[in-house]
Image 1: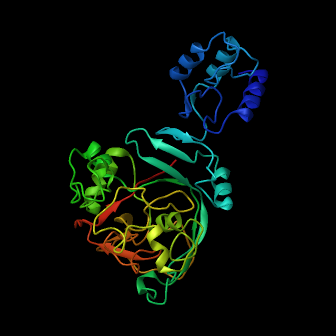
Image 2 (image 1 turned 135 degrees about the horizontal axis):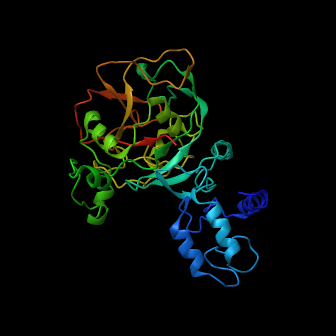
Image 3 (image 1 turned 60 degrees about the vertical axis):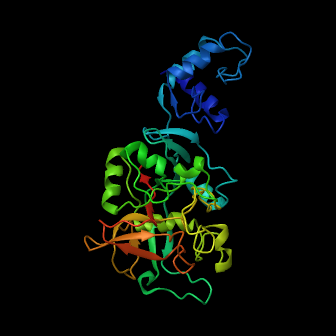
Length: 347
């Protein structure tokens, strides 16, 4: 590629909209391919183009634009090969913390993507540091010993995580059956929304089958808490220490009607994740063990133990269990109607 073309590509890239973050990605899916050529040819000869096919901005769609497109052929930088781009830059209306937006942008990776094999929507979590462990709510609920001691954790790698808990529809599409208890409509959940309830009655062991089939993984316990807190150091990710505010964030014992609810029905945290508190407990990858007071970098939990960690609380729990630091655990082969999971993936 000659220097003139490289300079032109760079200039065009600076003017490109954030939804299509590389030259020639006319449909904004994170890759330049035959679909983009089709859009360009559809506007051929026109004075400008509603599809953005006038790549060089000279007022006409012609061979110069085709040359720029072909020069950028392939996967857009910053978009994982397994993903379709939804939004490259973090949306301030969703990622409401300016420091978190800056950290996401600094990675050079796309913020919001969709896994092409599963259609799971995923958001980027940037590297960072935080205090892991108990944050008390009202004085009604003190710290639980497994949440202590509070310790400093550094995560050095960005990762993607599901914006929502894995749903019954997403599980069934890959696994061929639906193990869940809450498969019928209710007064609160109409029939059309039942497939969007989180999948449950899945053991840690059975979840491995879904992960193997999709290339996903579970987040580590530290990744989960960092993503859940989203820059807060309070019991709840709205920055509150008041248990009375939990109903805005979570389906729990006082709000759920003793049933799971379709994902995304409560307010998101400052990263854009929904239902990290309440709805269903979420399996993470770690074996369960006591915390160390020492600072840790990219911790993955004990090498072995008898149970795996569950986080976030569920629809049938009181506020004591539905907070960012609370830790549950169970034998990996056991299921429960309040246990589900959320996926993660490396870029």
